[in-house]
Image (tube, rainbow, N blue to C red; front, side, top):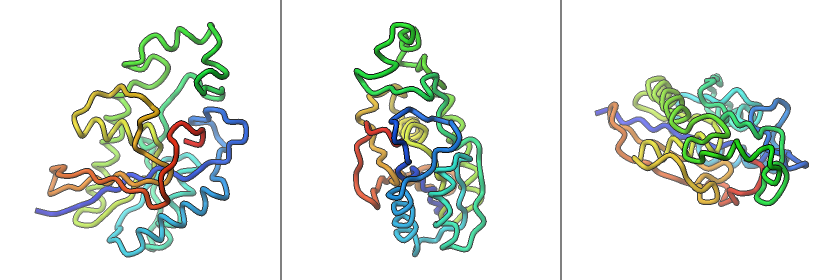
Length: 209
């Protein structure tokens, strides 16, 4: 059976001096450190059999993907299904004990953490992400593909394919900046999930996701 690997790459660090949850807002690009992280991941994947590179339409994902596509002489594709999760706190500060979470007017958004009530449902995220993965698998069949996305969509998809519940503690996500969550397929069957951190671990609670 044909072996295909689809790497889900979280983008690098973002320039976000005000510490807001920027979500899908335009204009948020990689920081200097984030650009270095993107180059490090490209070097890490240089000798891999990459046949397809695709990214979320957001700037930070496109910037992270570009060095990989360039090093393998591939055209960078875009898939809207890899985009960050929709979130009703977008543009606000949401650290625990800070900003929007302290305001009673926002508390109704927190009523159901299992869905979640403040944004795009976990199951919808998982389904669109898995669709993007399947498209990438077919595009790179017998080789490797890289899909550049965002922390919550990648972590949600991982929990989905591993048969775990969708709701979770965000502080426990295993999805550092510029990390790789690699899905290994034999034919159409997912047989293994491998997690690596080419640039090292980062705190999932730090704004910069």
